[in-house]
Length: 387
Image 1 (tube, rainbow, N blue to C red):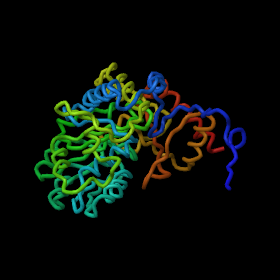
Image 2: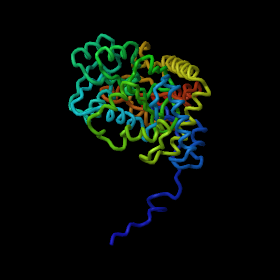
Image 3: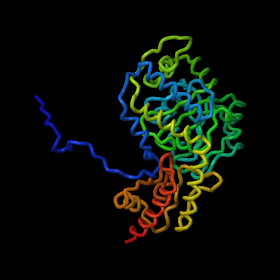
Image 4: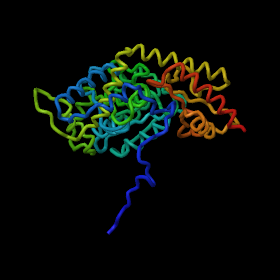
């Protein structure tokens, strides 16, 4: 008989005591104390009328931060990647053609993710650090005639902000659904789903929304719902099948809610409180704060001789890629920041790996005192890395 010894007191300490750090990488960021307090509130059942009321409140708040009237605007159990996969799984059937707009690592990841649901993937590309123009997008739509096009509003790997005006109209012109990644922009940068004619959108909570990861927003517009309702085959992902989850999240015509899976109760509380904080501040004020502190950060970088990678005209206010100076060991600087100053910043991905740091000032961490803190620590860490 196999006997596994109790690890407490030997390989596992008795009480969880994680290190405390200031999280200024690409995410997650530190959450507001009120969000942590909400997570400690007593749980109720996921079918409890009180919990279902909280879910309805979250839907209203998500519509506000995304500026949409989409009825199906909901929290998904899982991180932003789960909401992304939910969007793809529910809007894709075998043979559907997806056009992926690649200008960073997450475009490359989209090819992999979407390719799990259809073998008909095409792409258009532009270099890391640049955005697509309308002519490039229209050329791709005209050539490939896709059923769905994916694009990142804020590319988390580069800090590029994609101009969205006119893209939705092009997708409608070519009878194509538009799916948009707003993981790094929601709550921190203006996002207007209805004005931009976005059909499917997802995001994460752990960045500008200021909520720990574990639940994620998803919005499907009328054209996306029509596609989902006209499917000829079952959704190829049971857990993320929105046609089933919809019966839990919506009660059309007084129909009873139908159990699908157990919702992450405490994470839903956290999302509710994080969105409440955004609403209390006011969405426009939240956007203005992120912009003001980003500009302060960029000016401080210039003061110490560092340069952002992305042109200011398409640079995210939430996340900045900072060029690593020649002769500086970027990974060593990141380690010094973490071990000496208890500050986390991120390295870059894809073709930018080893060439840039990614520094985020998002949500609760988007404050001028943290701009000063990270710039001062970065300047000293660069000097220490040369010793």
